[in-house]
Length: 120
Image (cartoon, rainbow, N blue to C red):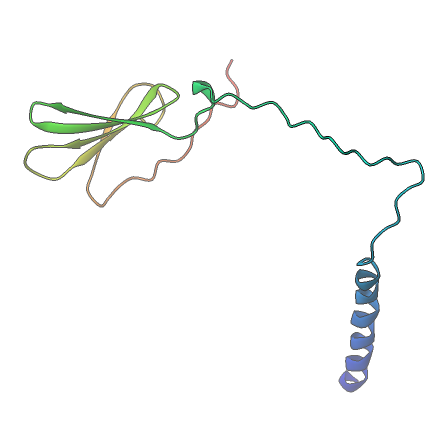
């Protein structure tokens, strides 16, 4: 039974692949069409601060510690604090409420995206 199915399956595959070879030829141009020589370029989009998708990173020194701030669209969402002595730690605003939670070392908590879908 299997020996009879192998040639049949091969014929089905060959028949299904034939239309793809027929489409490789160039199509004739319609009779009423015109060739456009001068295409106008679209207007340039200004790089607005609201449309920036990369975070703005600023670094400052406070009391011997180096603090690196990460902002997206003007809102502070993460800080990296490198004390003068000791390991660095992060302060992360997980919900966007301005409340920062400290995250230390290799046990970095995965920050799951949380969007407000509906408020009432």
